Length: 263
Image 1 (tube, helix red, strand yellow):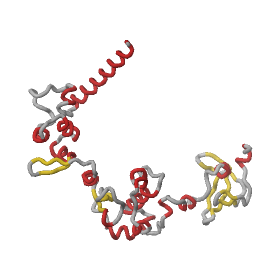
Image 2 (cartoon, rainbow, N blue to C red; image 1 turned 30 degrees about the horizontal axis):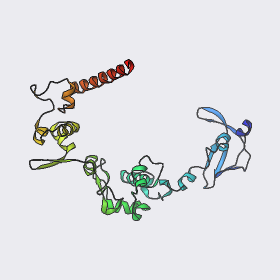
Image 3 (tube, rainbow, N blue to C red; image 1 turned 60 degrees about the vertical axis):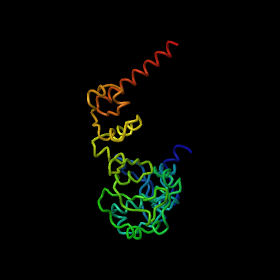
Image 4 (cartoon, rainbow, N blue to C red; image 1 turned 45 degrees about the vertical axis):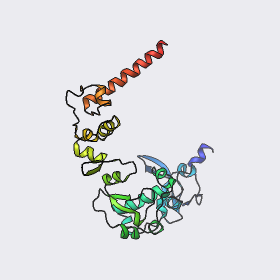
């Protein structure tokens, strides 16, 4: 396309849903004066656009064209009163559908792409969704599926906190000590340990009692703090042992590099 043609359009010319309804005029846009034309969208909205935006296809409508595209969450009827001033529940409803139906969503691969769906009664009706779920107990609650292998439906969903959802994941490991059974993350929070400390101790053959009753900073006689061994084999996660482990890894990589150079 000739460069000059990028900056000229004619009255009545169409670009997507836009129809040009005015001659070129100067207007301040984006902090500088630009040549613009007034456009009328098929839905009735009006807007000033630069000929360059129209010619290159960067502007095809007032936004209604995007809302009509399949898979876009906005293609669903958003006529409920909360759509203009979205509540937390309304945003949860929209997000739920986006991750199941919209391939452009960052979460689609973990939901829609693996067969997680939204039941028909919730898909097109926010009122039904709200009636089934009720309001959130607190702003920190989000929608949670009881069975992670099934989709979103009244019988499989509830409001949960992030902590409760973490405990519901299939990867959660529960430990029973005495008469108490808790996920590793809850034991770590309760005992003031890091969850990786507990897991490393178990992997290295510690008994469950020693794992959960030994404090993060181990007794002097058991291991020397500030060493890589304290981090790797005894599960200590204090800052001193973390630094020692990092230094040991740097020294190891450096020695390997020197060996390769010498060879």
